[in-house]
Length: 221
Image (cartoon, rainbow, N blue to C red; front, side, top):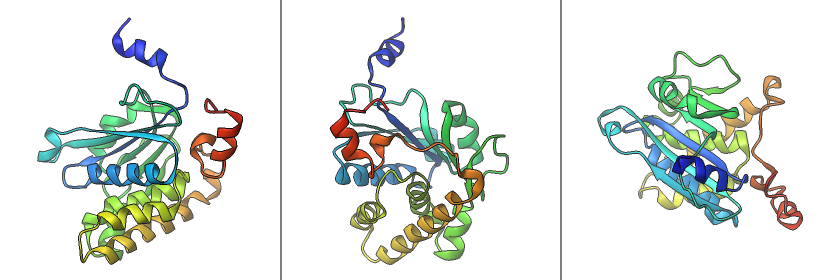
């Protein structure tokens, strides 16, 4: 038995695994850090982040992984992704096989031209950044707003606080606008009829159920 297989047998079932992926320069590492801080500051959940450096610095596919759990996290890397954000076609092609069958896929339709034959959430994230905020560099912030609106994994206010706390001086309004665009577009998409039965995060990761789960001990739900 491999070490990874042994660890997989030992980890608790209550894990939610996220991968933010794109290319170098799209700010996936920063986006993951902001999401981690929003989750960690707003809830009692444990959260860890791992990063991929290397070819992404030259424009290849890059990724930042987040593991969230109500219990101790002994293995910080994902086994099977619950949520995948793919900002480019290369990132989608490389990391889509790591997404579990009932996982949530969010893609940037501006740069992903050949999506898989499955239910996915598609938004023109880079185009929205260019046209509504006049800055393609905030596409990562728009993607965070969309993720939160689609999944409900953290309150809008908590994410806004995390983003503004890290925004360089003078960019607060652009980042705030980018997040609001992501919230709006993600919420509009999530309300479409075809997504009515789309997978949702486990109850312990939804703010409206967290206290009930803690009381009832339903961490494996």
